[in-house]
Image (cartoon, rainbow, N blue to C red; front, side, top):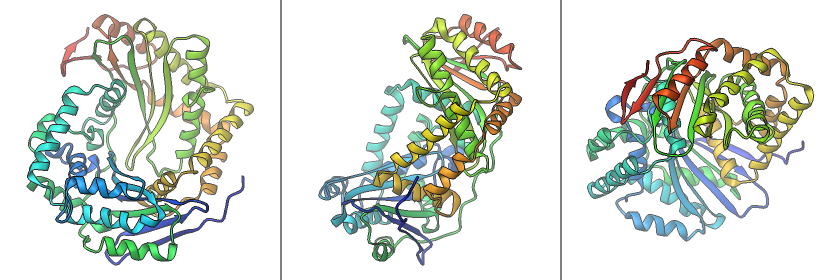
Amino acid sequence: MSEHPILIDKTTLRNGIRVLSEVIPGMRSISVGVLIDAGSKDEADDQRGYAHFLEHMIFQGTGSRDARQIAEMMTIGGGAIGAFTTRDYTVYYATVLDDYLTFALEVLGDMLCNSILPEEGIARQRGVILNELATAYNPIETVNNLLKTSLWPTHPIGYPTIGTAESIEKVTQASLRRFMQTHYLSNQVVVAAAGRVELEDFAAQVEDSFRLMKPGDLPSKPSTPDTLTGQLIATPFDMQQVYFALAWPAPSYTDDDRYKWHVFSSVIGSGPTSRLYTKLREERGLVYQISSQYQAYGTAGALVIEGATMPQALVPVLANILIELVNLSETLVNLDEHHRVVQSMVSQHYVSGDSTYTRMSRLALQENYFGRVVSSKDISAGIQSVVPDEVQGVAQQICEIGLPTTVLVGPVNAELLHEISSMLADFGDLATPQLLVNGANVLVQ
């Protein structure tokens, strides 16, 4: 697969900010992002949700702009401004017409260097986040948050990024400012842009817009988390279907084996031709949705299989997932299936790259995790280097780990949980099942 010549520049500014830019021929838009190496992984026990709360507050005004002015000014460039917080990092981004790049950088720089964290904004955003915690119910998000907490119970990577009601109630202007001063350091920042960028000018524009951001002593980073497997945890909720997720520990984002796990995940559960989708949905009609993801972070990773089904189908669905894992550990994927999966992954990578936002995101993430740009050519080569024996090897590693941590949300009672635990016990050692009712554990015999 041919590629256009890559036009990428990298510069490290005097204050330590790493600046990357990529020209995408034929584009009029530019996406620019500011990645800060601070997420929920960096929160102490009494700071849960601080990274996410601070992200909200950055939009609440500076010495020269209030929250409404920030939003209004970005619409002039025909684009959008936004932000998000993950377990590993926080990103602020904008997509604008190329004529407005300098303007977008100036606004982002003002927000991140001159935010005043107004008291009235803190009160307002506390209400927003508490309402989100109290009223919003997304079963998929609930399953994933409970899964991470159960998989990594003693490590901040297991925290939900939104925090807890208790921690959000305690947020003050002073505590947020301390968190910002500790983590929002210029030597923890990557600024990336992709689109119609003038490579020779971009670094100077960033330096001007972020000149007030200062470097500092880097905070200590969390170690590799201890992982718990073989757990079965359920939260009853009044709905028709049960949402489920199973997880096994997997390599971190930068691990040399990452491509093997990506390919394995695609074989077993990514897309309409994957093993689980074909067998459980298309052939047997047992699930509404099912998928597999290799979810990787800086210090850890997880192979997650998740989906939704009716309560009466849950036991056979979970059993068939484990049976398919055993099959993959015992039998090589045939060459036709392997080739189809690998070529699909490569094609998806290139297709998704026809976006300034995606290309900007790749630059920022690669610099943050690897300290260098990883080309599409190298990524496709890494995917294509995986052979069927290595896919089987991943399945064997998973089977050697034993039972996954399994989380259920939906119409689950003690009787169904007992039936599931009896089935799982046939595959390995299972910890005492937990039925969480309003956050409290109900013993299941």
